[in-house]
Image 1 (cartoon, rainbow, N blue to C red):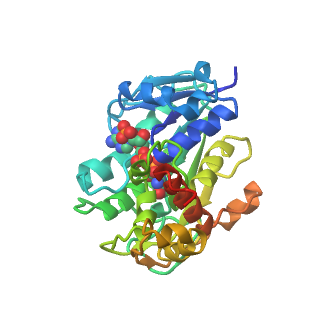
Image 2 (cartoon, rainbow, N blue to C red):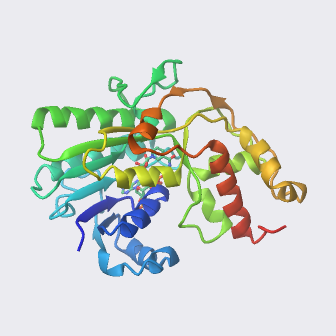
Length: 330
Ligand SMILES: NC(=O)c1ccc[n+]([C@@H]2O[C@H](COP(=O)([O-])OP(=O)(O)OC[C@H]3O[C@@H](n4cnc5c(N)ncnc54)[C@H](OP(=O)(O)O)[C@@H]3O)[C@@H](O)[C@H]2O)c1
């Protein structure tokens, strides 16, 4: 049996791909879910079934990630943690209690539990490019080592709440490490907007349950209400980095983003899927982009691969969308 990895957020867009990759690499995965009722659909998912790894996948219920004892049971006996569970910006969540607080408190509760667990070697946290990018952006160059001061709340809109939550979680992590000198390593991964095939998806509408809906908006006639910062990463690159970050010697701050322009998705789709454009499946929308100088090139050097491009992300999502609509060959 390989070492045990606690994975939070395993039923999310990024988490599901990390789950598949970790099982493929031979880890025993303990997936933390908000409710055990969510575990059955994960176990039964065709992409999990095909791995024949059900003996290496178990579940632990963590009903409230903001509770400071949330992960005490979940971390027992594990060698590694990949911590992805936290809310993304959503108009359906309260910015203060539904976005900002869970982003900060789920990380502090994980650190608290981890510090009580002698078997733990490494904790990898899903940060974000938003964790060290001033919002609104000011044009400065950003690297994985850039840091910002905590932003005082309360927050009444979703992007500032998410940004402040990721800043607060990163700063709390670094304070914790400085003050407690834990025996385990802590790694932060900083992805840009994540796009790419959603391995959970069984029908076309399922693609709207992830950040892919922002990209699909540009090619399905949606006009976005406001601009979004540049910076994107293919979900396969992000998942690969989370799993490879478990290896000894991996860097502690890992950028995962390439520059992109949302509206170029339309030109990419026109070039690659002309039939679907002619038949009206794809129609032009718009999402304005704020240019950002977030430099993650060192990750390519450290891990020895080139990030997939915005064009790769658009082609892969558009292809999956057509396949799920049953229109891939039109
Ligand atoms: N997607 C991106 O563009 C992007 C970019 C940078 C960083 N990240 C970070 O990567 C991580 C995963 O993102 P994702 O795109 O996979 O998000 P996602 O699809 O929305 O999945 C989020 C996961 O976190 C869990 N979660 C969210 N809020 C929770 C709460 N209040 N209590 C308990 N569990 C909660 C969800 O569980 P339920 O299914 O029970 O809701 C789900 O498993 C997040 O930390 C996110 O901030 C994402």
